[in-house]
Image (tube, rainbow, N blue to C red; front, side, top):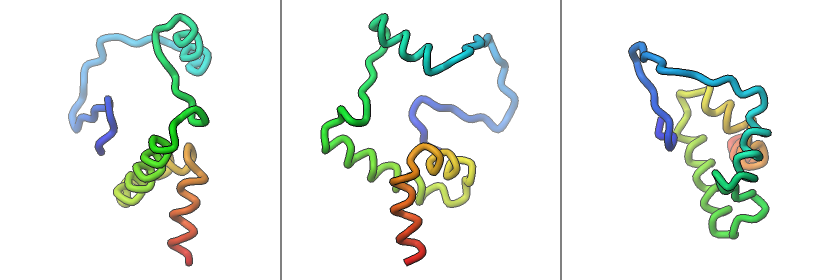
Length: 91
């Protein structure tokens, strides 16, 4: 899989540390308030970027034919875009 900033391993990997985050969404919004991150919300995206996102999500879904877990993630997070693909499959 080619997911930016993600890594996979076929063998065990040593964990150096972990942190419990009770509410990731709240933590992300807090980081935004502190200026640690910038969030570009979907409805604020330029049309060109939104079109790129739609095209990329469709391509990722098609390429994940043998990765149902990734397809499940895409369907769950982008149901409208994946719905366009699935309606074409059944047409």
